[in-house]
Length: 194
Image (tube, rainbow, N blue to C red; front, side):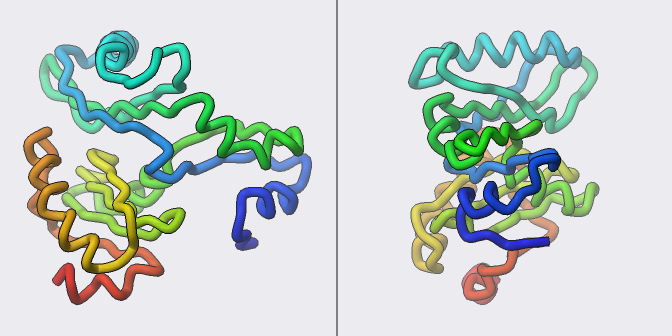
């Protein structure tokens, strides 16, 4: 394992035969939680696409989208739609593209963080990401909500967290946490969050 400070450094150190899985920071994506009347994945994809066309600040042709199925009930599903501007993705991935290294898979780093959370709990995850503070809610081991704060300091987090949690709760995100998971680099937030 190697640690690189920039994507350019990482791209230069990856062997030519290696498969690349790129995990994006939260601030690159627009996330929207949706409750839709279907449990069929292909139907959900079409419904999510239609909903995104109504809410995105730019044309749907200019974005790359996917969704995470949070949970399904008898005839409806809750999902987290993820959209990223193609121009912003191109700029972010330029160090890889300039070396003809195309990622085989692109996800959000938040998905990796919540995948390691207990599958039977609601967990608030906090970690530093690109000079910002990322917050995510793990619902039974799946990403249910994510947001980036403008700073990594405790004051910014304590000021913005109540409003964020209220907004998340209004979208149907559970906010009664069984635990809070602080990643490396967030030790200074342990006492304020307590």
